Image (cartoon, rainbow, N blue to C red; front, side, top):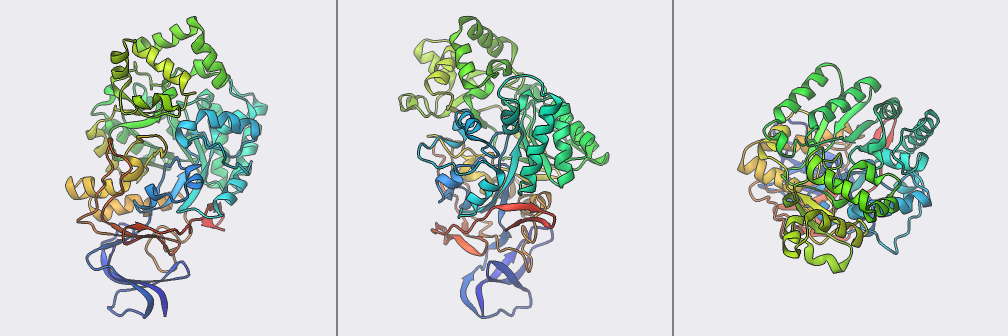
Length: 536
C-alpha cells in the first residue's frame, strides 16, 4: 500500500513532453510509480486530481529569502505559488561566508532586502553553517550561491579600489571552500557596492574556480539601462574567458533607451551560445523592478561603507556632486540613466515615522513638501538608515515577452518579502506566468511554460533526481487548475495568495493542502556534489 496516491491527474512532467493522464504514487518523499494503464495501487491517502494538472514544483532561480525563510518559516508567499526550491545568495550580497564584522556591515547594507531582525541568532560563519541552519527545517528547499561582494568585503573591505593579486587569491580560496561546502555557484551585484568595485580580471579569476567545481555564475550586470547590451556582452566575455557556465539573472531590458530592444539581447545570447558559451537566463513577469533606494547612488559615494556614505551626504560638496549626477549625468547605480523620480515609488521603510510615504513616488513627496526630489532622497536615506525599499517603474511589455520566449529562459521572482508594500512578485510570480502569459496572452503554452519553471532550471542546477515528475524523483509537486490559476497580488495589495494552486508537496509532504498552508517544514538545503545538487 502506497503512502499517497494522486489520482486521475493530467501530468505535465517538466521535460517539455506532451501532457498525459496518470495516477502518481508517493512513498517516503519520492515518486514510486506513474501509472498510465488505468490501474492504481491502494493508498493510505488519495487526492482526486481530476481536471487538474500535476507538475513538478516550481524553481525560483532568483530569491531574496536568505533570512526570511528562517525568520518567518511559514513562508506562505512562496510555497502558495507552488515554489518548492529557491536559489538564494543573490546579487553578490548575503550572509555566508561572513565573520561578525562583515555581518554587521551586510545587515545595514541589505536590510531593505532581508529586514533586520533584532533577536535573530546568526549562528553560522560559513556556507556549510548556513546550509546546516536551513536543514533544521524550512518550508521549501533552498540552494545557495556564494556572493562575490561578500567575499570582497571579507578580503578587500568596503573600499572602491582594485583587488591585489594576493587578495584575489584569498577570495578564490574562500570561494572554493564555499563551493566545496555545497554552494551551487557564485553571484555578483555589479551595480551594488561591493561587487561593482571588481574588474573583469577579478571576476574571471573567480569564475574559473566556479567552473572547476561545476557550478555556474549568476551576475546582476553592470547596467540594465543605458549600457545594458554592453553589460550583457561583458558577462558573456567573462564566461567565455573563464569557461564558466553563465546564468543571466533577472535578464531585463529596462529604462527608456531600451524600449523595443530585447531582440538585440536575444541575438547577443544566441551568438554566445553558438560560440559554445553555456548561457541560461531568468526573468520575472512584471514591468517594474524592485530594489533599495540607496541602489541608485553613484558607486564612488558608497566607497568605505554605510558610515562613509552618510558622511558624504552630510558634506555639502559631496552632496551637491551626488545630486548633480543623479539629476543631470546618470549614475552607475541607476544603470547609466538620469534618475526619473516619477518612476521611484517607496515600497517599504524601517523607520515608522516615514510610513506615510509608502506607496508614493519621490516626485510626489517632493511636490507636497516643497522640496526638490534629491533632498527628499537624501532625507529618506539618512532617516531610514538606508533601509528604504522601492519599486522602479522602468520596464517595457514587449521586452518582457520577447525575453521570456527564449529557449534558455527560466523563472525567477527577484522577490523582496519585507516592507509595507513589497512588489507583488513576492506572492504572484509563478501563477502570473500561468495565468497572464499562458492562458490569457498565449505567449507560452502550458507545457512549455512548466518546462521553463521546472525542468530547465533543474538542469542548470544539476539537480539529482529532482525537478521532474519521474519515478524515483523527489516528490516536489504542484497540483493546480489551469483554468482558474490566477495571481491576485497587486501593487496596492501585494500580500494576496494566488487562486487555483490546490496542493504543493515538498519532499512528499504537503505544505499547501486544499489551498491552505499546513504547519509542515519539510524543506532542506540542497548541496552541490559530484553526483549533482541534492539534499544531504
